[in-house]
Length: 138
Image 1 (cartoon, rainbow, N blue to C red):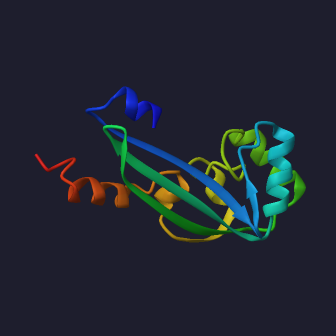
Image 2 (cartoon, rainbow, N blue to C red):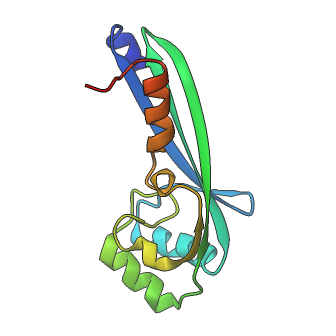
């Protein structure tokens, strides 16, 4: 809301994401060690990523949207997980993987919209922006 307060006559979009497996929330690991720990816990399991966005205008929330996707991680060796972390350095990615780079190879199945995995459900966002006439075709 601070940014919307500072930019009252502008639309402001904020988005964030969490990773959840068996009731546990996985945040951004920040260290390689923590990333390997998180990936080890997700290894061979299905988890979900939940992405959400809000649109604000004139310091008021115009709308919110939440979307989730389920991902099944392959069963990988500890060495493969360590090698992956060295390759993509997913230290600022919840769940400890960067799907858009090499992280997609960690998974055997994905149910849902891949833009949700990337942190912003782009089609629902565009649909809302068009519906509310915030954006239009040229």
